[in-house]
Length: 176
Image (tube, rainbow, N blue to C red):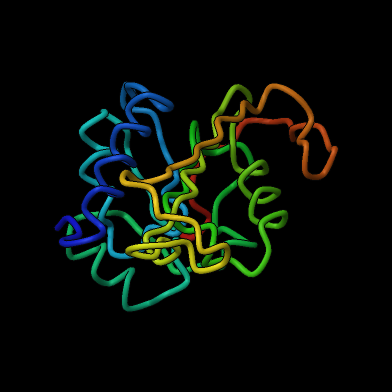
């Protein structure tokens, strides 16, 4: 189920960014970080990514599971996933929901395989006032101001400075 009303332009912008930044998954594994009820799952699976969703809300995970998404309840600071177990991670319109971003990015780095990609789509519909910016009073943009970051796991993490972990994992999810 897609958002209705004011959220619809943001969801469509997120879909376009996911397609551009992640590209075809070729049946590789993607972590949907802060998956909520699984709204972006259709877009990600449509790009041929296998998904595992993580969210702190039991109610949202139940909804995501009813939609067919493999999903687990977990904190963004500690995923129940093995080191280097996912090919990509995406967090879509959730950055304002985290208490602090560095631990989230550190944890994403831990679970990404070498060469993996973290995609952060950082616009959030709740932060867009209908007619003006609540902080500055500036006119609101006529289109969503969606930002994105693509990061590769080839180099040491820019958040922690640590090198990627080594060794293959046999299971992406420690809870499975």
